[in-house]
Image 1 (cartoon, rainbow, N blue to C red):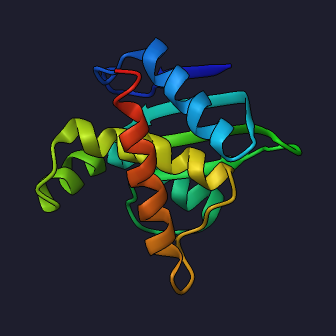
Image 2: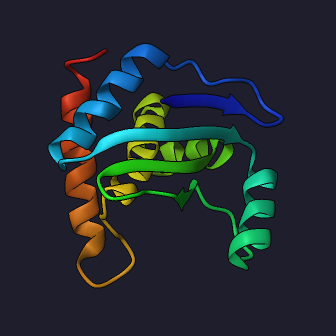
Length: 140
């Protein structure tokens, strides 16, 4: 089950049913099934608090993914800062909606085992995001 929650902000204008179907389809391409996934949309202040408390990082980010996966079942809590998503959209000259869905799927791709910190990994993640965003057109 995928849940969509907010903490201290308004819910973004996403089509939950279609988004859930898309996420499940992307997970399926990696041989994974969706278990318990919670999206928590929040502000920069909240994501900074989570980053400091749980990861000992003192910076803003667009998403923090807590991985509770077991075998092929994806489970996790995904905190998304809508403030940073908006800033990134402006910085990359991308539509806000596109950047939001990129971040939404970015967390799922992490749960599927794709990383983006090591050499060459960012390019692999970006290619996976782009492929997933193409798939999204079939659901929205």
